[in-house]
Structures are given as structure tokens and as C-alpha cells.
Image 1 (tube, chains in turn purple, orange):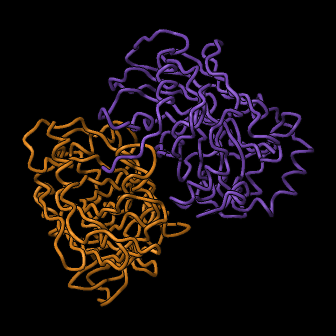
Image 2: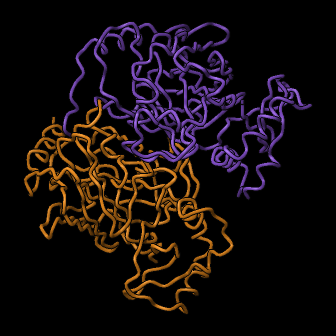
Image 3: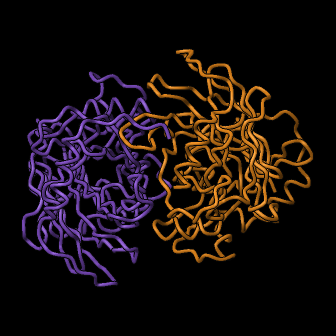
Length: 308
Length: 297
């Protein structure tokens, strides 16, 4: 099942015939305080809704997908948790220590929306295409073998990243939390439609030119470990989003006027536009220096975290 | 005014040594739970001052009311790196902040539960916290920035060291229960100068941290301008202004921790560690020296 947010605060099922079935009315029974509650309500009550929604998905509706304006499926996730690294990227190094950072949920945009580059003096703004998980059930200290049950669905995330801002020498992650830097969509796909999450092709095209192109089979730690680990740190809630990390081979600049399409096979694709009031310019194409740097970093033995 | 939230979910003000229920002043605000209620209440605070004060003037004074954090789950929890000179003569370091899990918050009387993760140590970091009162972005670096602030409170940024891949460890600050917050939000009119507050933290009665917010590298106004230049701030967001590392020490099973900011309040929490790990019960001088050395380079 594909679940989308669209038009003016509507929630819908995207049926197999690519029509959209409006289910906003069905979700009113949960007394939403605003349209932003619709998806979290659907996620929380999916067990009682599933039969009805499956039926609607099979029947289809009268509104063609092409005629609706999609939005990010969740307007503001309660948390956006991102994995640091998590792809082997052609290296044969030992597994790295797991680590995460949090991305501002104020940064969410969706299909057809625009990333606005801030005036900050970044060395570059990169796209990072990632497979993302939407959490379905409150989860704390879940075991590896239970972890997949916590998943409500999958979506496609572009973790837009400003490089070279903030304090140097400490791996600053604030450059990933600018407003409009958390692009995801076009919908959430339930796990029954993703038989093997480690056999997905992730791509980014900028103005039609292929940049990132990798398989989730290269993921260093499997999803069950990610969920288990993160839930050993912080309680996960329905609607929290976990980004599984990116493969840095293929990152490139996002700059004014670009159209960036992020796609994952079997899930879908969405396109965002880039606005830079400063009109800065970077070389087009893949950032090879970045790709090499990540491979070189990956060849070094994992460091124990220092104590500061 | 000191806005507080009782353990049984009543909004109140702390006054004359007790708690006065002012929930009535917010009765029209719809919410689903404590997590989404307080951001709505805090966002409505400025426009309802008179009504709240009327309610507080006539309400019954209750003693011994158990409190929870005044924002049990902030929409965002954002912390400053370092941010104190700590006695080192140097230029200011580049300003930077990071997001912590908003699910790490606990309130007065709560218990910090140390996770099984193999940290080298778990430190207390007493910090001045700002609670955002109005949706805002690109705030100017002058007094106008303070208009976006609902008030101030105390925070302990509990920090597990050596966890994860990054140094300094940030994931080590996001464990559930690792951000004691409270006891109340003291509105900005109740704090004459946020850059002249004494911050103290004691463990089992022994003084550990004792510093003044006058030593901050980037003051409250610059923190607001900086972070709102990155991301939109929303009511209930909590900004931690950084700590002075001279006086950090371990937290371990059975500890009672008391943190005070002069004019703002005192929050006490307990510590539990099912693994009963032990560290020397004293100030971590090596940590203090290392921070001074690193910053002084």
C-alpha cells in the first residue's frame, strides 16, 4: 500500500492503477487537531484500518495521481534520525561503530517543493539519497529479531547537506538542519510491497544527469540492527523517521535552478527544485574528491570515541 | 512568572513557595497529551499574561505538588558546543550547535537511568536553558531576539563519553532520561540579566560545578540569532547554552543531583545504574584540563 499526503491537507491511498483514493474522511474518527495529525493517526491505527484501506487500494478511485499535488507524507516527523555512514562503498574494511545524528524536523519538504540554499558560507551543498524507514510502533530497547515489526513503511529521503559550516574538527552536523533540507516522499510504502529492502536501487538525477546510483545491498548494518541500536538510545515513536545512510560515491553539488530527482526502485521517485538567492556556482557532476575522501576515511581503523 | 506543569498534568505557576493551578487560562487549547500540550500553552503565554495572573491571584495555593518537566517533550532540543571561556584567554571558537533527542527530557524528582552502553564515564553538565515562545527564524543579534523567548529554566545535559563514532560524542547525550529540565519556566521579565547568573550543581551535597553565565562565549542573543539562521524555532523548543567544564564529575548509581540557577530555581534528580559502575566521586580534573588545553590551542 502506498500512502500519500496531497492537495490541501488530504490523505490518500495511491492505488495500483495510479489513482488516488481520498481517505481524509476515514481518519476524521480519530479527531485530528489539524491535517498534520492524519498520518500519525493512520500509523497508530493501521491494524484496524488495514482491511478497509487494502480494499480501497485494490478498487482504485477516480482521481489520477498526475492530477494531485503531492506533499511530504509526514509534515513534521517527531524525530528524524540519520545514520552516519553505513555503506561500505567498495571498501573491505571492518564494520564501523554505529552512530547517529538528529536532523531538524522543521526542514521537511516534499515532491515538487524547493530547497532554498542559505547564505552561509558552505563549501558545497550535496544531495544524499537514502532509504528511510517510518516507525509504526513505540519502541524502546527492541531486540534485533523484533526490530522489523516496528516498521510502518519505507520512503525515500534526500538528506540535503551543507559542507564546511560550523566549528571545524568536530564533525558538525548542523549544516544538515537548515529549513527545506529534509526532502522526502513521494509517499510511504508498506513493507509488504518491499520484499527485500537490501535489493533496492537508489538513484539521484540532477537535471537528468545520473549522480548517485547504488544498491541497498551494500548497507553495512542491516535495518534491524539500526532500529535495535537507536531504540537502545532513545524511545522511537510512530511517525519517527530513520534514514539508513547514503553511499557517498556519486554525491554532487545542488545549485540554483537544479531539478533533483531521487528514486528508489519499487518505492517511487520525487523531484525537488533548488533556489539559491546568492546564485553560487559549483562544478556540475559527481564530486570525486568527496567520494575519494570517504573511501580513504573508511580504510582507516575505526577510532574509539574520545572522551570529550 | 514561573510556569510549571504538575505530575498530574495541571498547568500552574509557582508562587509563595507553592503551586497555583492556572489550567483554566488555557482551557480552550486542544491537545492530545502532555507532549503536545505545553508547546501550545507556551506559544499562547504572551497573549494570556493577564488572564494567567488573575487566575494565579485567586487560585488556591497548594504545597508539595510533584512537578514534571515544564516541556516534557520539546519539539526540538538543541545544544551549544562548549561556549564558555573557562579561564582561557583566547578568541572565540566558531559557533556551533547540535540536536539532541527531545525524548531525553525528565523532570524534577526524576531518575537518570544510565544505559548499558560502555561509556568511559557519564558526566553532569549544568546549563542555562532557553524555552522558545514564538515561531521565529532569522532573528536579529540584538535585544529583539529575546522577544522570541518564553523564559529560562535549568537543564542538566547528562553526557555519556566515548559512545559512538564521533568525537566529542553526541549520541551519548541523547539517551532517554539524559536531560533533566525544570523546575519551572521563569519568564524573561523575571530575569534581569541572563548573562549574570550563578549556576551550581552538587552531587550528594558536594559542590561540583559553580560558574557564572557571564563567561559565555556567545551570549543568549547570539545563540538565538545563530540557530534561527539555520532553522525555524517553534514554541516549546529548548536551547541549551553550553556548560563550563571546570567542575564536571561522574554520575553513578545512587547519586542525588541538585542543580540551581540563581533566580531561576533548583532541580533535583536521582541516578540509577543497574550495572553499578563506579567512578571516583569527585570533580574530573583531567576533563577540565583537557577542555582548557584543547580550547587554548
